[in-house]
Image (cartoon, rainbow, N blue to C red; front, side):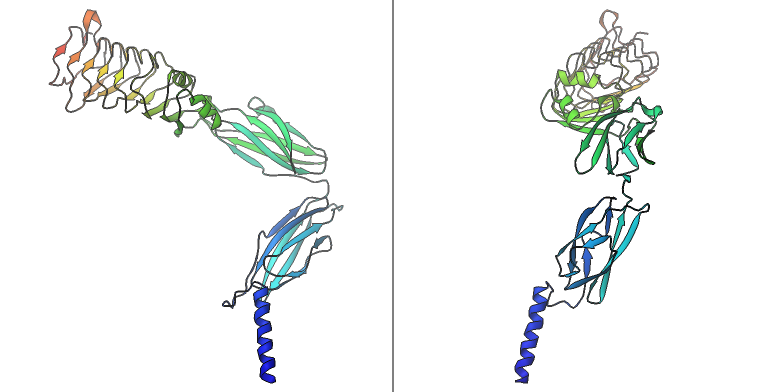
Length: 395
């Protein structure tokens, strides 16, 4: 009879462990929560946590103003805490202790004063491109906002979005200056106020990469990425482009560095960068075969990488690019047209890639390919050259 009793008692213990979710092969106790801190506003409110434990747990301590849904349970239980309205003039704090076996774990609870005003964050960091600055507000009182007078020209109110809490949304304009800037917004309610500072980066020198899957959609892609074209300083584009897309590029008034090496195109649109005042450093498409007439003439171009595969630099392609200081001509180029680099007054170095196939350096009718390049004092002509027109290097 005694042996039968011991067997039955052992079976009951095994079942109890199984029901509580305890691993029968583990002797280690544990207890943890989905979150360890609860923060209530001043009004009556409920919040829940989930308890994870190796077995049964009990709940002790706490305060009368915060009531748990139950004080004992098993692993996986959800416990809901109800905080009664705080009508005092002080913030309230309490700590609950959960016990499982030989372990204990603390849950910290804080409650604001009724009528208190709280904000999600005291600072917001923004990219130079600008966008929406969202301030989440938790309050059971009326409140107002004030944008500091020093930043009203670039921070403007947009709307209030009410979900479970209120969200004030402000538009932050693009920062076209290199220097970062900051602006303050003050939220006021009764005798309490909170200040949010918006920190915005200056014009970025880091490269932004965008992929354009379909011709004519560059502007739409930039919009979808929430990029302000006026704030882009360095850009890499991949994919497909057409004339419309190059117009969008010209509208990027602060764009200095452009990499289109991975754009699938054999020729740029007619005079795509003629008299351009933005792009200074350019990497041309790897698939390019021709640099068209007056493509970069009278532009602010300082540096350009011409890809292997280009066979022709047409008439006046780089004419009067007065900021251009050096150029490397790939071996694939066979013709440099009339006045191609004429008037590039700072062009001091012209390098022909090893194995050059260059045959013609233009210069008919006084329009020399390198005419009036006053900074150019020496040049090594490839052995492959067959024709150098009379005024090719005229001063």
